Length: 270
Ligand code: FES
Image (cartoon, rainbow, N blue to C red; front, side, top):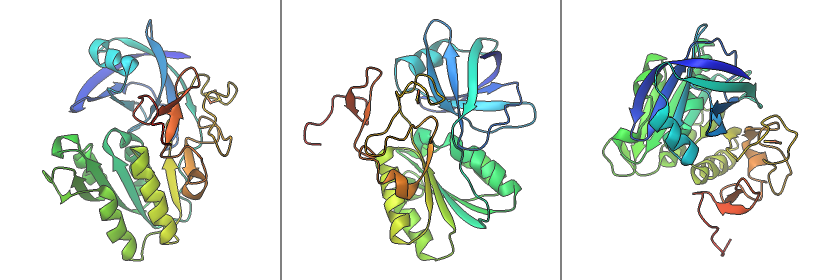
């Protein structure tokens, strides 16, 4: 594990902060790191923008550990980093791609857009959020040269409704090579199914509770396929993800017990 000082903290949206670390990480888009906060916990985090001297972790307040990170971490504080780990997004041979990011699942889309646009791949980004305040990195995606379309639940910006409504319109144009997505799991299920309907490949990035982060403890195994999210993912082909029994339905807590995707007790009707 390497220990780094936080160089900068950016408030991105309600409940989302970015932490800039001075280090060349050399991660591929879609890979993740295990972030250790002394005295609190260690959690997997996706990686945002990367340069030759820095990388960014954007952390949404989504549990005790991330809430403490928001509360306690500031410039100059130290965090431990293991990784990068996991299978990245792939885009060899693609010329026209669509990225679908929902809420705090958007950071890995940023790194993917950064690398894809640098390779000259036409990149359209579809961003979804509860309100205009919850749309992440819109300006940065534009600066990278992406075409951007947005959807909000309350209609405060862009299309009022689901970001997947925008995806359907993009796929109907018949020009898309591949769809990439990260965000709420029910949204990703719809993305993978839509891509399947249009006979277009898709890649989805899953999140599960992790311990080792590199494939030995079995904590993150997925029901239905037995694949490990940390080693065989977190990026899965959409067709494979749709075969995961738990995709869009449930996940497991630190004790391995089934819980709902919102982290609450499981709906008995599942
Ligand atoms: S977290 Fe240990 S196998 Fe995935």
